[in-house]
Length: 179
Image (cartoon, rainbow, N blue to C red; front, side):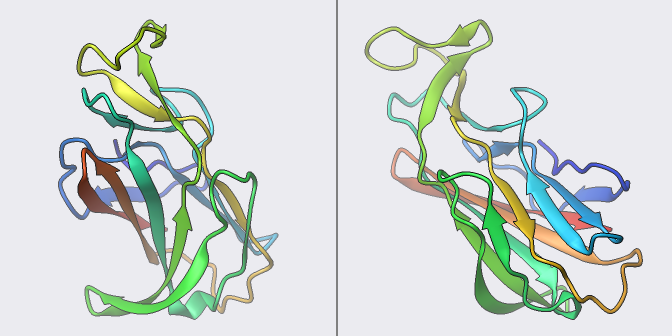
């Protein structure tokens, strides 16, 4: 699924193709220029919210992580988490993407995944019977403290790398969001 956004409106484009068994779903990144805050949320239910992995593996996915890359011109951001299942994003240093420098922030999921089908949550024994999905029980929800950015204009690119382990294999891909 694409990286989703809420108002104001943003252009979204993939940086990587979405691999099989990847951490799919919606992650909304909003910027409030008046309040000088950024919010990140994946609230809602499948297919319009939340995070999930399409997989027919009997074992649930593990090691889910979201790494956000924000322009260094926005300064070092301080985050709070809206729940205990997702750690508040932690600054990890700077990286260069497409010739620009970004500050990286990692959030790790410490919650559970539950098996779900289009008809509801799987309740039988022995694991899933078909290629449905594992849903993260808790959606990420983060907000920054006030930001002292130089400009709240348009044209800034933000990146999100999603990582999850399925059947012992780490699967990762990156999406692009342009404000």
